[in-house]
Amino acid sequence: MTEICVQVKESLDKIIERLKNIGYAFEERYVIHDIYYTTLKKSDLKTVGYKNLLNKSLIIRKINGNSGIYTHIVFKNKTLDDNGNVVNEIKTKLKIDDEEKAKTIFTNIGMTCWCDYINENIVYKKGEIALTIQNIKNLGVFLEIEEYPSIENLSNKDKFEVLSNLVNSLGLNLNDDYSAKKPYLLLNRGE
Image 1 (cartoon, rainbow, N blue to C red):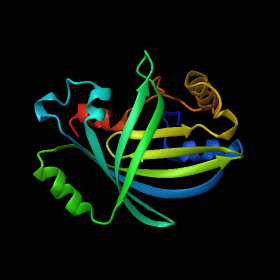
Image 2: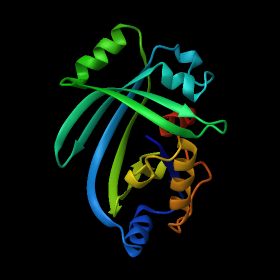
Image 3: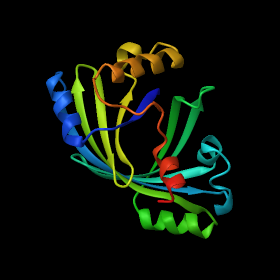
Image 4: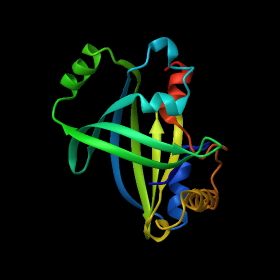
């Protein structure tokens, strides 16, 4: 799955107003609580690089939305291009029923918690395209767009370009990183 995630330098209200004005309709709202654990030493976290850190990490992910509350252990395998953009991601998920026991197990085997954050998501949709506005305390507002059916047969590079062009066409004030790595940004801010 190819996606882009870019920070938006505008208020949540302005982003929502802009999406509505260009024909996007509200789809759903949900909250994700992600807690990242790694097998790496705490002293190595900021020096190993994002890809290496993620390869040695598991996430306890709790999703609270209209369809209920779900908790999973997640492993993300990301493919980065030469510029550090995430051009493909495969998530492996295992449903669990007790977040606290998972934390205890991870801690007891020596894993380190390196990021714990809550991501408030608001999804707007137009045709096959779903845009997710992500509001993260102490970090900002982001816009995420995943590949959609009509581009799924393109190369990862072409999908990334189509998605980047789409987000640029929205008329929002965007950061220049279209592959924002939110947990890594939080880690490097000391949150």
